[in-house]
Amino acid sequence: MSVFDKTKTTMYNCQIWRNNEYTMKRPMVYENTDHLLTSPFITYLKDRTALDLAFQSESRWDLAQRIKFIVSLITGMAPSKIVICDIKECMSKCDVESYDYMYFKHWYDQGYETISIDGNNRTITISEYLSSNIPLPEGDYILPDGKVIKLTKINNVWSKHPPEFKKYIENNVFVTVARYTNAKRHDLTDLFLNINDGMTLNQQEKRNAILVPYAEWVRNMVSKTYNDMIKTVLNTEKQKVRRVIDELIVEMSIYTAFGTSVTIQAAEKNKAYEDDSTVSQQTRRSEKIISSFSDFIKRNKDSKLKDKSTLFNLFMLFVHIYENDYAIRDEKSFYNWFFQKENKRIGNDKPIMTTKTGESRSYNSCNQTMSSPELTARFEKIIEDFNETIDNIVFLKDANRLYTKQERYILWKNQNGVCPETGKTIPESEINDDTKWHADHIIPYSKGGKTTIENGRLICKTANLKKSNKLKIVA
Picture 1 (spheres, rainbow, N blue to C red):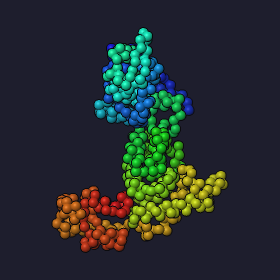
Picture 2: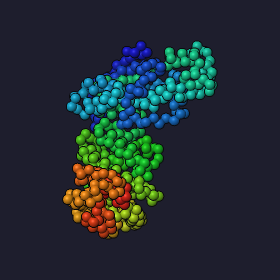
Picture 3: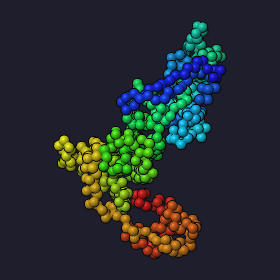
Picture 4: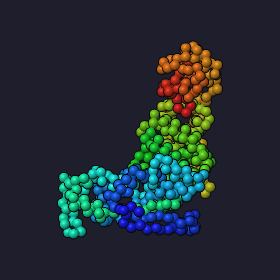
């Protein structure tokens, strides 16, 4: 126990609510310890503690909230404890072949000692206060012995506090920390949900706290596509904080796995967050498609793209293009064509399906749900319009479009092994490496150019993609 510790207690929790019934499980062991605010344990807690975004968010308190917390802490009116788990202790109690062990080892290998379950904003705020970055409100502060300390803009940060005030804080202000020592992944999830039991967490916030690789993948995809795609239709801070933006990625990944054959609602989303779920096993494919779609939106988005259902409809068509080996002649023309047709579909009140209960639904009313029958009806209507434009805005790729290995070698020899676009030398060993060099049509294939030596050249992949006017996924 640290010399700065005030109290220490060990508690046990033997039950948990799961699947609508209480189930016995092994005891959850943790220590409640009061640490002085200026103790080494608290001072360095921020640097030793991993921030898992399954439970916490990057600090989002504004200055007013941070000041209010420090004042509450100093005046003894901030009893909420910081909750962490001890990585090494927890890892030692896991089977080395288990997902639980791998989870804790991931953080341990990065040099962290604990994981934050609750209190990240408080931990960060304490660190900033002790670094003199948070000023206390000016005014009179009365110590327990009745002495009045006056704080002004000259002395209202930690390093400038009057000695008596500083001494009082050093000896009397405590922070309670609960440290869990035998938790597994699902324990941490349940702990987070229990701590936040007084808050109304939506379904996606609860899923976000499930410690499976898929949850981390979703967060990474949100980070990767937020500015280019997600923000276009989900742009409020509340949608970001409440994980509504994450739910869009979940829906897209479920769609890439199953198409319209499943209802993309709560049950299917929950299944995606199970260990080794079908959706989680296809994240590599989903990432390729969603990332390409996000790039496409970035290049073409405008004021016409306003709502989530329209974005998802465009995504369904994008997946169809990908899966059926189509290419787009001109992205902007295609984008404008889609919205012209989408507006007509939305404006048409004619029913396109009938539900099992006999209710007629128009295209627009189908847009209000992600149920399988309505998704299917939407998709079929989109494809009906799409089929009318094949060979106009889009075309089916032809195997004759590709240069053979022998032809690539001839192109390389004719160019004296140099890329005509960049001037870079093309090593002979890399002639057929599509990750670095593309066999390009001088007169584009989509414009009638033939796959001949006279109309070809071997050029840098990056340079070819920059000049391309087609979807990246079909380049």
